[in-house]
Image 1 (cartoon, rainbow, N blue to C red):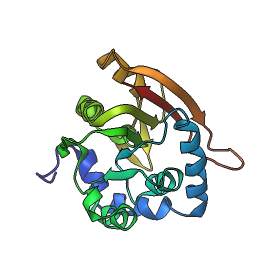
Image 2 (image 1 turned 90 degrees about the horizontal axis):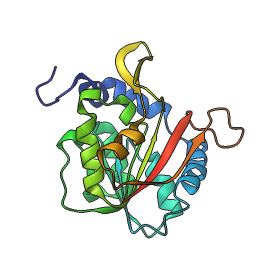
Image 3 (image 1 turned 90 degrees about the vertical axis):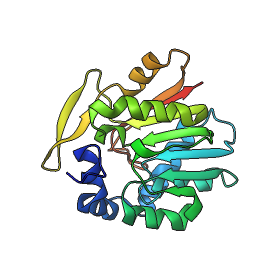
Image 4 (image 1 turned 120 degrees about the horizontal axis):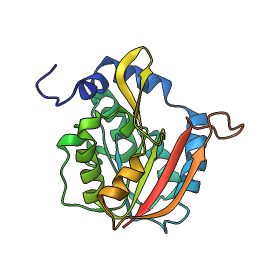
Length: 207
């Protein structure tokens, strides 16, 4: 494993597989689905001044948020260089952190710190690190949108082992930080006729 990475999962997403992911996850239909998704998830958040996304890829989530909240400052953390270069075209060079989530540090706090479809790919032994960074980055709200399972399970992911993990991420965060309140939650189904998502369960937490 490359010494710059702490886990095999980081190396996996920083390399060729992460670049292949870009091609599968873009386009106008995904943008439309994301607009609907964030309109639902963030209906209790009043015009956030700033949003930070952990694992932003090329910015399909941030593109939707830019349309919903055109005055918001948007920033993103992305480990894959090719994806980060595309992300810069959407939110600007200065707003992109091309690095591992584990290495991210910032004194700045954001109205919404969010993560969508990323915790499922984090090495379980490092989840506490990500929870701490999400909590530290948030001024008011944390949005977690992931595959849900009441107990931890590991799933084969496109022929690869130990690359997808399902569990109750939001529940673990609330247990770690008892002051967090569950503000809202919901489910988006992959067979939705108009706005499909990838069977994502989302949780809006409030400080």
